[in-house]
Amino acid sequence: GTNDLTQTAFGFSRDDVEGKFIPSYIAQGIIQVSPFEAIDRPGAFHAGFLRRLMESRPLSGRIPDPSLVMAGQGEKGEYMTAFRDSCGRYLMVYFPVGKSATIRTTDLRCKKIRFWWFNPRTGKTEVSWKTGNSGAVTVTPPSTLESHDWVLVADNGTSRFRKPGRK
Image (cartoon, rainbow, N blue to C red):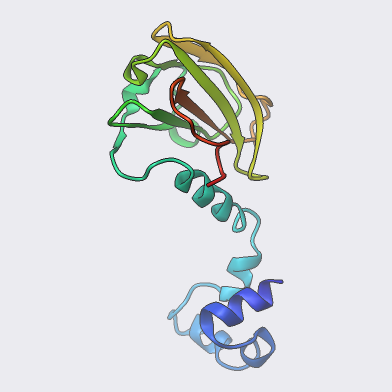
């Protein structure tokens, strides 16, 4: 459980410190919240899913590229973040809410593209499909609820990557 995770990270148990020095640290402004509460927060576990997603594609050569989102870009909390591989092997676009967007695919430099929808809330690939590379594609995440975020992964059709999130 989270107690085991915290013991590993900090070298002490929840029972040992929650009534001892953690309240004092919070009162003095040394920390804002108990590390045990932070680990228990909704979404904290999802960071591990996103790490596995990032590690499932080559780490070197990533280029942040907001121009990949050609249409449908959101503002503030709906802003989509995108990056691509400098060798044209893949691209990823984070959709903070479930809404449609048009994504530029010319940097993949291939005839066929394999698309995947990665669910950062579960760590699973929900949907995948292949299509020809026409230079752009309009996509809609599998669920369009405002509270559902998604990551679109597009692989060059000649790449031999595994499902996103798997090494």
